[in-house]
Image (cartoon, rainbow, N blue to C red; front, top):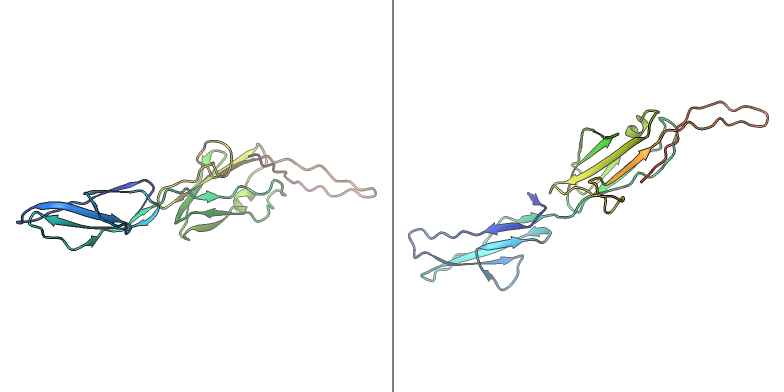
Amino acid sequence: LWHNTDVTVTLTCTDVDGSGCYQTFYSLNGASPYVQGNTVTVSEEGLNTIDFYSTDRAGNTENEQTADIVKIDKTNPTGDIFGFNTFTFRNAPSTVLTLRDNNELAKVCYSLDGVAQPCVDITTGSAYSWDITSIINALAVGNPHTFAYTVEDTAGNKSDSNSSVEGNDAYAASFAVTPVLLAQVRGAATVAEVTPCLLYTSRR
């Protein structure tokens, strides 16, 4: 499993019917020399290995062992910000947001007008192209709409606003869109047909 905080590993020695455990030594990620101790704090991001062995009071030395890999990921995933601000009602251009993580994405969750929508599970690794065209096209005429989303990776890290938009919220990106009917266009000799359209203004 991936962890998004430091991990403390405790090495426990046993010496059944022997002289008793004396000392335990470990090496974190191949460091030399070995360190004497039973507690290892793992803080470095990535795949961490711990090699270890113990000695007893009679001078016997255990064969070196390797613990399970400790996987740490403290980096938040990221997502794009909405990229355009006008389009014809129900005819939005293709809108694909790129979601990224340094290891593995897990899901993206979003809300419309403050109402949470079902999350989308991601099983494509460290990058995902999220097509929200149909979501934008479904917005109705009326009051300004708000769209916000957050991305989560397999370690439990969530995207924040620090790298995307101002503010102190959990979303990777958020915007407000206001539908406005476009004015009728007239020519010198003819009157253009009126086509109801929407103007969406992005506010970050």
